[in-house]
Length: 454
Image (cartoon, rainbow, N blue to C red; front, top):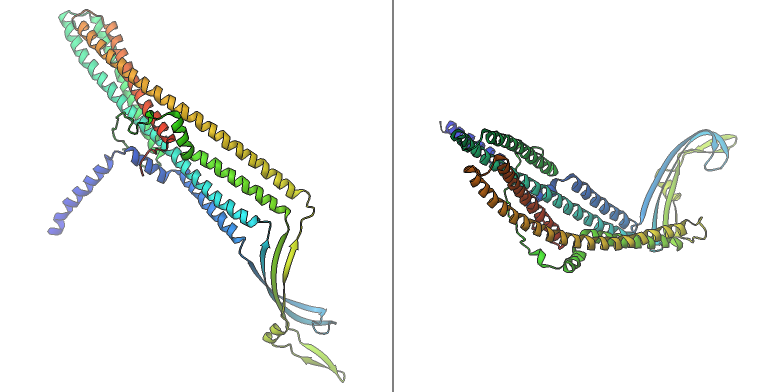
C-alpha cells in the first residue's frame, strides 16, 4: 500500500518538472552560453585548433632521431649463385637479411627551430580564430534575442490597440443608436478593427519567426515552446557613451581579436621567410646502420669424386658472424636546384608583405568601425529620445481627439488618422529602442566588454 501510494506523488512531480521545462524562459546570457557550447561553426573552429596542435607535434618530431628497421627472406630455386663459393649451381637456397638505421638532423639551416616557432604561432592564431567565432556568434545571438523582444512588445502594442478599438466600436454603436454620430463612422471603426486583427496576426507571425530563428541559431532541436525573458529595459550600464572615440579605439587595438589574428599571421609569415631562407644553408645529418644476413643453403665439397655436404651454420652463429655496422655524417651543400630555394624565399616575402598590409588594413577598419559604432550609438540614443517625445505628443493628441470624437466634434476619418499616427509613434519607439540597445552592445564589444560576464 505504501508503495502504491507513492505513484501519484511521483506522477505529480514529473508533471510539475515537465511543465517547468516547457515554460522555461531563456535569458540573453543563457542563449549566448548555449550557442557557444553547441554552435556548429564554433565546433568546426575548435577542430582547427586541434589540427594546429597536431602540427606542433610534427614540428617537435623533427628534433627526434628517426629509427627504422627492415627484414627480408627469400627463396632461390634452380640455377643460382652459391653464397659460399660464388659458383652457379642448381640448388635451393634461402637467404635472410635484417637491419636497423638511426638518423638525426644535426644542422638544417634552423628550419626545424623556425618550424616549431611557426607551429606555436599557428596554435595561438587558431585560438584567436575560435575566440573571434565565439564573439561573432554572441553578437548574432544578441541581435536575434533583441529581435524577439521587439516582436513581443510589438505584439503587445498591436493587441492593446486592438482592444482599444474594440471598446471604441462598442462606444460608437451606442453613439449611433443615440444619434450622436452617423452610421458611416461606425463602418469606419469596424474597418479599423479588422485592420487591427490583421496587424495582430502579422505581429504573431513575426514573433514566431524570430523565435524560430533564435532557436535555430542555438541549434535547439525542440523549439516549439522556446521563449525568452521579457527584459526590455533600456540602459547604458557601463556608461560607454561617456568614453571618447579615441579612448575606445585605443582600447580596441589592445582587445579586438581580429587585430590579434592579423598580427599573429604576420609573425607566421616572418617565420615562413626564415624557413625558406634555411634552404640556402648546408644540412648535416648523422646516421648509424646495423645489418646482418643468414643463409640456409648447405655447401658442398668434392672429395675423391664424391660430393660431401656441409650443413649451414646455426642461425645465431651466422647472425653474429655476418653482422656489420656503419656510422658517420652526411653533409649536403645546396649549389643549384632550379631556383626552387630562391623562389620559395621570394614567395614567402610576398606573403609577408601581404600580411603587413593586412595588419594596416585591419587597424584602419577597426578605427572606422569604432567611430561608426560610436556615432551610431549616439544617433540611436537621440532617435530613441526623439521617438519618446513624439509618442508623448501623439498620446496627448489622441486623447484630445478621442474626447472630440465622443461628443461628435470630430469625424471617424480624422479620429482614425489620430489612431494611426499614435500606432506609428509606438512602433517607432520600439524600433529605435532596440536599435539603440544593439548599437550600445556593439560599442561595448569594441571596448572589450563581452556580451556576457564570465
